[in-house]
Image (tube, rainbow over all chains, first blue to last red; front, side, top):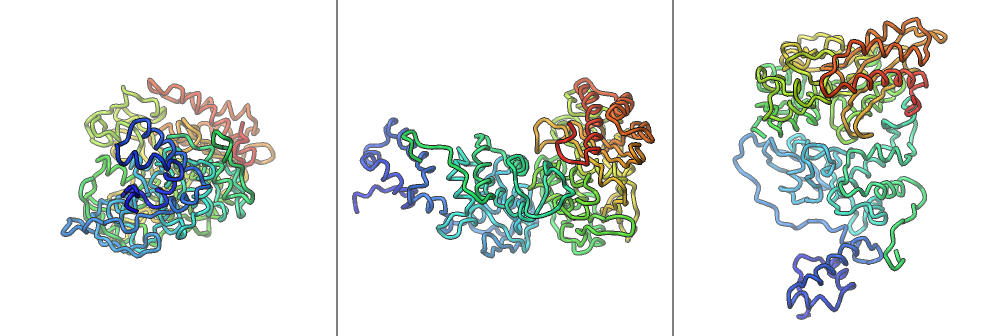
Amino acid sequence: MEDQPKFPDLTDAERKVLEDLMPDEMSEIITSGMKRRHFLKLITYTGTSLLATHFIGIEQLMARTTAGAPLPPPPTGIDNGVNVTFNVNGRAQKLLVDSRMTLLDALRERLALTGSKKGCDHGQCGACTVLIDGRRVLACLTLAATCEEKAVTTIEGLAKEETLHPMQAAFIKHDGFQCGYCTPGQICSAVALMSEAKNGEASYVTSNVRQTGKPVKLSDEEIQERMSGNICRCGAYPNIVDAIREVHGDKAVAQVWQFADGTI
Amino acid sequence: MRPFNYSNAGEPATAIATVSANPGAKFLGGGTNLVDLMKEDVMHPSALVDITRLKLADVAKTATGVTIGGTATNSFTANHELIRKNYPLLSMAILAGASAQIRNMATNGGNLNQRTRCTYFYDVNLPCNKREPGSGCGALKGVNRNHAIFGWSEKCVAVYPSDMAIALAALDAVVHVEGNNNVKRTINFADFHRLPGDTPEKDNNLKPGELILSIELPANDFAERSYYLKIRERSSYAFALVSVAAAMALEGNRIKQVRIALGGVAHKPWRASVAEKWLIGKEATETNFRAAAEVELKNARPLEHNKFKVAMAQKAIARALQGAMQGGEYGLEG
């Protein structure tokens, strides 16, 4: 195993994806440095492979958590410190936070849960969307101090062990992202949307709010309106709507993209 | 963000006493506006008293209508059966505002207390009498496309951003507040928010330390015919250029009662009382809706960049009334 290329930042699943695609080139890249041509190939293949659900490794790759990442030492003697005991992704957490710290910063900087993203940091983009007690909220406008005894679910808490949450799987199937930065927020938002629809909650485009009843059947227009708090700069909106329709509906929605050789 | 002390209130009286005793203290509801303003250094309270755990989050029937709690979230309120069935105008207006995430966080009291989104107010490098009294109004001769066409003063031309409050104005809601030493009082919705006059730093008539306990919605005959129309730069998740809350009760085809309130046009929810008066007793026809809208907008005083709002508001009033006639179904108002 001494010849095994050493990619310290790659998981086994990621290494397998790369090796399956370009077994001859790995050692060259490692030993002689990366030529531009190879680099382009590498990133093209890697990017493409992320969308290819037929690779076994992909599910493990997407379900990977940062458990075990080193945490910074807890702060001491801070002014206006607040002790917060709360639950994050099923685990009890106790933190001493500066009163100014947002939930987003606490998740990312103190708990090493970097799935939730800082997009605008002003409540305008939705990249930081997480669930608190099952409802979607913006972690960038939530002070960590206010989370005492609350249960927070982030993108890292959606998959069950190695099994993706159906919404995560649907986003992969329908190519619901390009750069991926807004994706954790989109998926958390979409997961909450499913419960809101189940509870019969209305939206601005609901044809008649006086007619209550559950569950609500979501049209594309309803999905668009209800997901409007999550901005996607790459414009993956139609694919995001497809992914949500698939999870919301009873029947599968056809995958509309394919590789150049006609395979999907 | 500047340092501040955070505390959690168990009882309304404790929260009110804490904020009353410290001019730098503020109540913290959902934080969707306040935390953002603190990040921008527009507001810099020295203490925040978290009121979201107070038992003021109910929606309940009363002898004369329905009451909604000051700390109930916007989502909870908009989706409550009592509101959807009896005050669909309020549900529609709340759901027209912000995003699902923000509505899950934002409280009803906080919604009424939110600040203008005028860009001169938000940018601490620009003059703004609301943020810094005496510094001047940047928008008056500046970029004022999104600003007021009614009720503004030389000191301030900002508009009030809430959708929810526009419906509350149309519904003649009553705000129940409590101040220090258990002093309770009620404020009629028309008197809750202020026109800017010479003191634009004051958005509303709450006294220091007063907390919104609840908002009372009197019973009405509008559930069958009410509509909230919001016109904005994109179809969702944007503040209104112009919005209209419209509600009607008919006798045959004649208008027995009508309420019209406009958003995005003034420093407070703007009741179109001229149009309302004109419509009483008239037939509920599109021609009359248009005529009423025209008389209301005759009083408009647009600024350099927002003349379009006059025609827009005029058409929006007629469309919203038409929407109410169609039974409040979304998208049918034409």
